[in-house]
Amino acid sequence: MTHPHRQVRPIFQELLLILCALLAIAPFAYLLVGSVRDESDLSFSWDNYRRILRTPLASWMMNSLLLASTQTVLVILTSSLAGFALAKYQFKGRVVIAGALAIAVLVPSQVLFPGMYAEVRRLGLIDSYLGVIAPSLVSVFGIFLFKASFETLNDDVLSAARLDGASEITIWWCIALPAIRPTIHAFMLMSFLSAWNAFLWPQIVLQSDSRLTLPLGLVNLQGISDGPGETGRLLAATVIGILPCAVLFILLERDTAAGLMIEDGSEAPARM
Amino acid sequence: MRQPSSRTSPAPGLAPYAFLLPAVLLWLIFQAYPLVCSLYLSLHHTAPGGARTFVGLQNFGFLLNDPRFWLAVAHTLGFTIAYLVVQIPCALALAVLLNHPNVRWASASRFAFLSTYLVGPVFVGLLFAQLFRRDGFVIGTLASMGVDIDPFNSPVLALPLTLLAALWLSTGLATTYLSASMRRIDPQLYDSATVDGAGGWRRFWHVTLPGVRPVLAFLLLAGAVVSLQLFELPYVLFQGAGPRSSALTIVMYLFIAFFAGDVGYASAVAWTLVALIVVVGLPLWKMARGWRV
Image 1 (cartoon, chains in turn brown, yellow):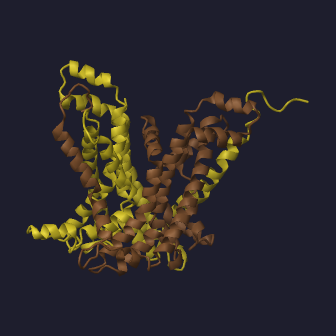
Image 2 (cartoon, rainbow over the protein chains, first blue to last red):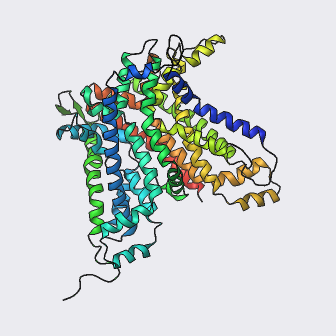
C-alpha cells in the first residue's frame, strides 16, 4: 500500500515483486540464451546468427527500418502541427474539426482495410512502400496527445516570439516543439513500435518477396522452417527483430516515462 | 493605409488552417473515405477480379448464419473477458507492490515490467511458439514432471496459450500506467484514512482505487477494444486458426474472407466488428464516466 508510516521491511511483498519481475524477463532470457546455443550439443555458438543472416533477413530489416522511421517522422510532423493548431489558435471550424477527429479515434483500423485496399489499388500503390505507410501518416490519437501537451504551454511566450517577428511556423518549430520534448519522445516510441510491428496491412499491400518487412519475412520463415533444430535460428531472428525497438527504448526511456505521465495525467487517457 | 495586423497576433489568420491541412487531408483520403467505401462495399458481392454486384444486406445475412463466424465471435468475446478479468487485477496488484514504501528493487522491476511492451505481437507469437513447442523448454519440463500437454495440438489449450502471451505482452504497460497514477494520489488521503482506523484493504478500496479510476477506465476500454481485434498473436502462434479452428478470431475470419478475394464480405465482417465494439465499449465507457463523478 502506498503508505509512508510502516518502517518494517516488507519481505513478502519484495519477494513477490522480484518474482513477478523475473517472470516478466524470463522469456527474454530464454530468447537470448536459446539464440546463442548450438542445438545439438547446447554449447555456445554464433551459428544461429550466421545462418539467419544467409536468409534475406538483412534486406527485410533495412525495409522495416526505412518504412518505420519515415512513417514515424512524418506522423510526428502532421500530428503535432494539427495538435498545435487545435491547442493554440481560435478559428472558425475548430470545434467541428476537433469533434469529427474525436469520433474518428473510435474507429478500429481493421474496418478501414477493405476500403483502403480498394483505394490503394485504384491509386496503383499495391506492392509499394507508399501504399504501406500512407494510411498511417496521420494519427488522430497523436493529434489529441499533442493538443493536450501544447495546451500546457504558456501563451505569453508564444506572443513574445510573435512580437519579435517570428512567423507562426517558426513558433511551432523553434518554441513549441522543443518545449514538449517528452511528449514527442513518448509518441515517437509508440509510433515506431506500431510501424515496426505492423503486420496485417503490410501483408495486404506488399507482394514481392524483396519488399517484405521484417515481421512478414519472419512469419514466412517460421512457416518454412518449423522442424526440430530450427528453434535457435528463429530465436536469433526474433532477437534481431526486437533489437531496434530496445535501442530506441533505452535512448528515450527517461523521456518516455515523463511522456507517459503527461498522457496519463488524469484527463488525457479518458479523452482517447 | 492600415496595418493588416494587430499588435498581439500579426495575422495568424490562415496559419491554423495551413497547420491542419496535411493532417485533415490525409485523414479524409486515407481514413474517412475508406470508411465510407467499406460501408458501400459491404452491400456488394465482389469477385476476386474486382467485378461487383449490389446484393443489399445479403453479406450480413450470410455472415449471421455462418457457424464459423459465431465460433470466431465466441472465441473473441471469451478471450476479451478473460483478458480483462486477469489483466486488470494483476496490474493493480503489481502497481501496489511497486508503490509499496520501503520496497527494494522497485525501479528495476518497473523497467522489467515495461520492457515486455517493446515486443510486438508478431515477435511475441514467434517467441511463445518456440517456448511452448512440444520439444521446447516449457512443455519439455512439464513432460519430465509427468504432465503431458501440447498446446499446439489441443483445441482446449489454444486460447489459454494466446491469453498467456497477450498478458505477458501487455500487463507491464498497464502496471506502468496504474503505478504512475498511484504516485499522484495525495499522501494526506492515506494519512487521514489511517487516522480513521482504515487498514490496508480499506485504504486500497477507499483511497487507491478511486484515485486510479480514470486510468482504470481507460485500461478497461482500451483493453476491450484491442482484444476484440485480436489477430496477430494467434495467427503467428498457430500459423493459422489453430487446432480445429480453436483460435479463430473475428479479425482472422475477416482476413480469410479478404484473401479469398471477397472484399465485400470482408467489409461486412468489419462493420459487424465495429457494431460489436460499440456494443461492448459503450457500457464500459458509460461506467467509466460514472466513476469520474
